[in-house]
Image (tube, rainbow, N blue to C red; front, side, top):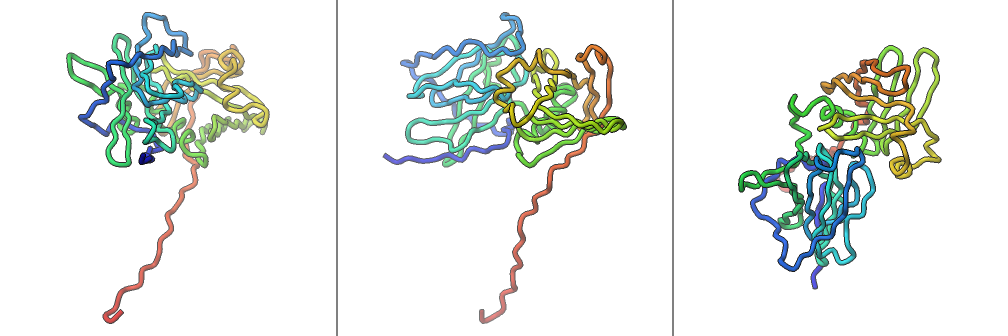
Length: 296
């Protein structure tokens, strides 16, 4: 039996890829019910159904660890999920062919529609599709973060310019700055805050509630980074424990305006920051090529 590995891109899949082939479920497939994924507590009648094809395993949704897989991986799975934009980390394994790293995809879900995650394989590469049926025609739900429109709202721009760079690149850092405050975002949900007036520094972890239907929130929890891992942070009660909660009510990629809802002393206040990408630029090595002369 020949085994093969697939190339799975680590960067976000944007939906620019389009494939005609579909992965159909066999008639013997009995879906495994994974229940409900609804951290934002959306009303039950607004949830959407998502069907995950056989051989696909979901390990993370919006940085929450999930275990949507089976040891034999031969059955489809179903889950009810809140509407809005969600990010998935997906692996494929059919017993003979598998991905060597998770594929990250982002999709937008709308109440009233039913979605499915499938895959297509071409040679040594795999593409993940998230689709829904619109009047008998398959439509892609993949969210294109590289061609945002005003309709996607400030949170989408914020996620692209502030959150995604540090999520994908361990060396990335994004600085939000104004006259009084610096907030540095780093990989693994780390933030570092400096009060320019007093010189005091704090650090901790942050989370983004990426539900674009209800509006997103950023939760800042001051903590000892060596004692609180990102996994423990997300598994805890950060919504209740966060000292600061802010919503990006305006973001154009160069600036962002936060509106605070916590602490009470800042509730309703807005603050403008300038966004600066401090990620080191990695230059590819260039080799000098000597000219070939006649007789060489």
